[in-house]
Amino acid sequence: MAAAPIQKFMVTENEIFIHKIVWTRPFAGSWKLNYAYAYNQTSRKAFVGCVIRFENAAFKALLAGAAGQDARSTSDAALMALTAAVGLAVSQGGDFLEIEGENETTFSLVTGQTPPSDELTRELMFRCLRELQNFRRVEFRHVKPDTNEAANHLAGMAMETEESWFYADNPPPEVAAILDADVNGRYVLWEHPSNL
Image (cartoon, rainbow, N blue to C red; front, side):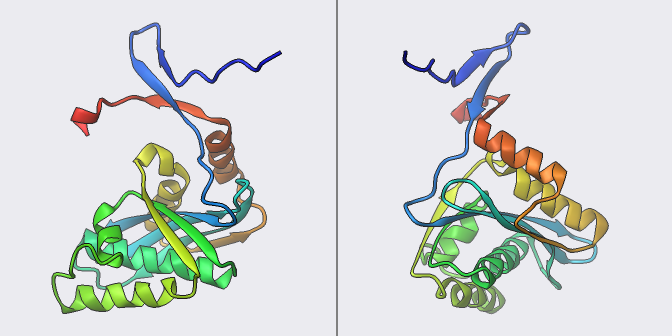
């Protein structure tokens, strides 16, 4: 007997259109790194939240904490956070990495599609590129916040508490619940592409 198809879209009894998001596998033999940043404009501190998972979605490691001082903007904060996240992946070993995040501008900087706007941005970009050179292959994938929930949760916690956490092998329960929901799929409010 064939399995029932996964229902991707659904209308609730209040006529709210929702859709199901499910974790996607990275390219063959790679790890997936989800990263997010948070930025405190008052202190000019950047914070990172990131999760590394194996190709089969099993948890590898996570980091939440400060990513840098003296960030002038959210763009600086996003670059600092990406560098810290990639640094975690480097420290864990591995050759192939797929990076998911919400900041397309950061991805276009490190892939050479957009030139840095000034010397400090160039310096931050080169720090990130030095970390990325530790991998044999890296791919970037832009995602929406709903798909990046664990990393956003960790970045927010880091900014709120100004503490750092590192976990290997077993994530804390609240993050494990988010990661499980990613793999099993969960329904979120659907936004029409014209509203994004």
